[in-house]
Each structure stands twice: as C-alpha cells, then as structure tokens.
Length: 64
Image (spheres, rainbow, N blue to C red):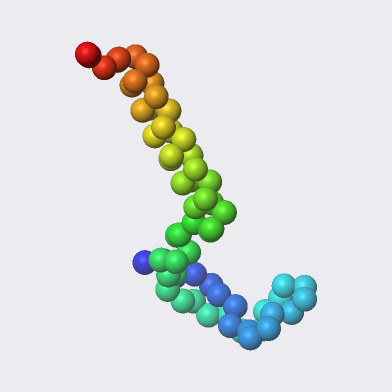
C-alpha cells in the first residue's frame, strides 16, 4: 500500500498551508467513487443493459 503525505492540522489555514505533515498509509476508501460518480456509473450500466436487451429482441425475434 502506498504512503501519502497528509496534513495533520485540525483546522488547516485558509491559504491551504499546513504546519504538521506526516506520511500515512493510503486507505482503500480513497479508491471508492464519490456519490455523484456512482450514480453516473450506475445509470450508464443500466442504460447499456437495457440497450443490449432491446437490441437482442430486435435482431433475434422470438420463435412462435
């Protein structure tokens, strides 16, 4: 797992500077998508799934 430089200040300064830094292990939560990204991914997945289902029905009709 990678080590990243992180600010340890309880309240960082307004300009973004930090007085205390430390290298910490990078957690797995940083790899997870944000809520907005997850919604977009989910919508794209279901749209593609329904598109494939519709294409299958159109291109290969059911036999009677």
